[in-house]
Length: 283
Image (cartoon, rainbow, N blue to C red; front, top):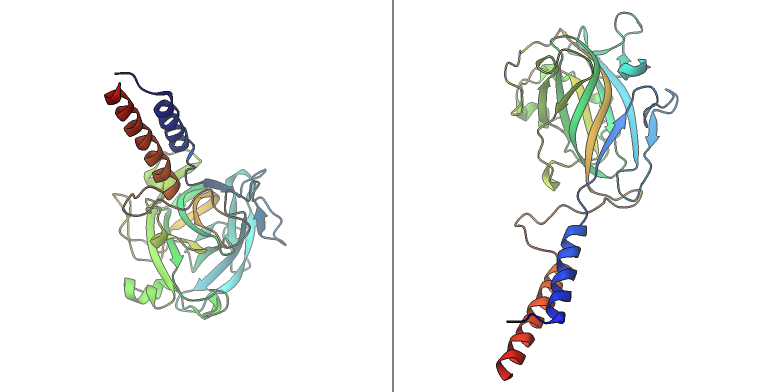
């Protein structure tokens, strides 16, 4: 049986369209020397090229909390190829990494309204147990406004998921950086599923807060005083955008339903196949 040119063209269009469907855009935001986010401390922000396809602007700030006390704004320190650290107590040495020695230190990431999922992080340097907690903002509004970060009591005092949620944050993952290779850089996937439920505009990358989390690496050690790392980069996948353009694509529907345009093309090809069969029967 011969296949009509109409069918071949229709199927060709469908195949090429499916192949051209954009994937979710994962972007690396690098804080190391020469990276796309290697910004002066006075700015603490970066704009990523290709704002039509990624979460274009990332703003970041450092925070530290003495044991049992509120978070206070902290200085972000540039650490060359190792990335950045946080100095929350006025001492530059040895407290120039992100750590939980005396003060819990956290890097607040703001993707300016774009909803992203953190998919990976890299420490350019690590010491001690090097456990990292990753939290997403699930509260209402802006965590810098309501509630203000400075009104959040040291997260180490929160011993359950419910207590963490009461602050507006949700523990998404805990990674054990000393479980990876022994030489820098130390990369770890977050193992956070990329979907709308897990997406947020605000993220905290913190030294270990005391709750292991469901995505902890095997061999995880519950230690809240000996975790040190310098953050070289984070990876994020844009899920939806309300600022600075749009993501490369919205995530696929949860039930896997094809997009209307794709369905129309498939229907066109099938219609062509039906016409071809009728012509063959008449012949």
